[in-house]
Length: 398
Image (cartoon, rainbow, N blue to C red):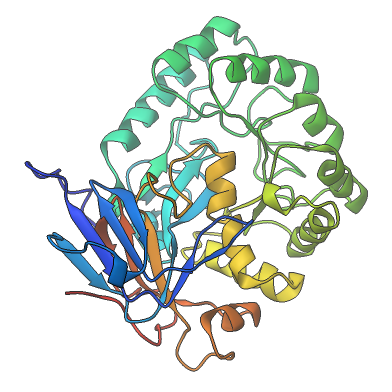
């Protein structure tokens, strides 16, 4: 589906009922599986979770029969670089966000709109661009996907009042620190502090240079800067040495972001170290696309399957890295199946002819699930995926 979010209807809030859920993944790492087979959402928010026989499902505007398949919170991509609408000049590709929706992703978070041709680097220009991008994607959702954008890359000369001005205008993110002229920990830490004071969340580039103009950001600078997210701890693309990755895992209390575009061995090192330290709740996932390695519509699903299979993590836990962990760390109202949260879901089933007896077993063997439907704010946004392997069973609107 390529049209934006439909205009809200007048009158009573829309009611969605999803029944006959075979497996309900919560997104909550403490309890990744819920004992329920039905969800009701009203006005785009989850209002009830439980057993169909005990719930009032009458009067629904939309009823979805899950046909016994799995429902999870919509997946969140914690690290993207949007350009304009559903187009990226980095890869000259249209509809990459729509394709990613077909990979189960319902929310994306910008790590900076760095691929925009002629991106302004003067302070007036970068603030204007950040505010404009926040407005662009607040006003327009490609295929319904929530894109949190307007993430300025900090430059030398910025002062505290600049961050207040950005926050007052609705900007809530900083682009990757290290992609602009600020590449020393002292200056970056000062600006990160100003950003945090005004409610702006920060991310830092971690590892070797990704594109011309970026540079090495080592563990010392990451620790000195103290951002809210350690961006692509497994490199984007080149990872830090093992001892520096372990140091970050041991020392940081912030989100540890693993990306598809990074070093897979370093991703597993991060996973194993975090598990040893009891820090699996700090792991979040992104793709870092579009980038030099292209657009990865199934990048988040591939990361879930890879970490589960090669990292020996139960699949239901690996799904939490891309849902509840990210939602909590990014302070979003999605990513968890809880009353009051946004009704953003992905319905999946074991891919046809894949190994394993269940979806979870299949994913832990390294297979991708088949996406059968996505729902955002209580409205169906896509049916059977054109990109994943075909789901064994599909959900249907009845």
